[in-house]
Length: 249
Image 1 (spheres, helix red, strand yellow):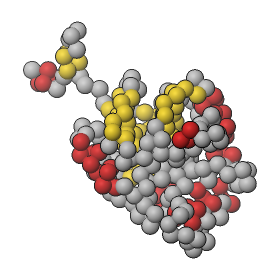
Image 2 (image 1 turned 180 degrees about the horizontal axis):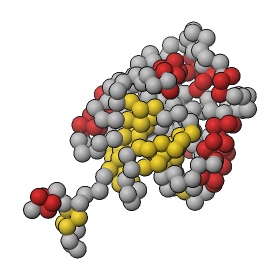
Image 3 (image 1 turned 60 degrees about the vertical axis):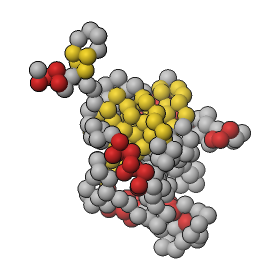
Image 4 (image 1 turned 120 degrees about the vertical axis):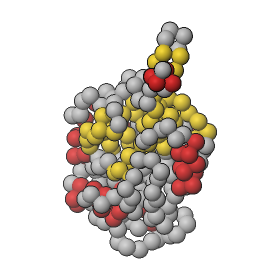
């Protein structure tokens, strides 16, 4: 009787419910929206997030459930550096540096956060200059750009590290694969290196953000989902079958 109370009748018998993992797109400081989403799903014990978490003032938050996140280009990269050194901005924020694999619940996850910049792509990570400490604009530019922080980019060495990974369930990037035409524009905003990693890694699922637009497609034989900004929608993913359900915020 105890087991049946926690089980689901399928028509073919009683089965234990499967675990769901939530997926969030760019947050950009919309912390109240995340809190509302998590309150709706108390049974979802952990979430993944594809970067651009910080507010434009560089603020982070303490989510009610663990969130495993990668960097976008709208971050306070001093905070990101602290997280890489074991000092996260909150106890429930778990930063995933580029590479992997990482154990996220039952998944093996790989990360390639940040944006692609040809002029910095062949640099070592250690050579990416930090912020100059000044904001060029307080309204029109994103945090990482306004502070001219090159740590917002990924580099070739990190891409190569991702290419050799195998047995990955979920590959999380901030950039989109090609082709990607945000809002119907004619310019392809996708990045070839993402497609190259998908070809070699062959994850079960690819999640990305950056463009604030939901898309669901197949790239290099891999299901690739672009996530909305969190105040529009989010995903619930069956941790075993990878069935994805998009829900409006």
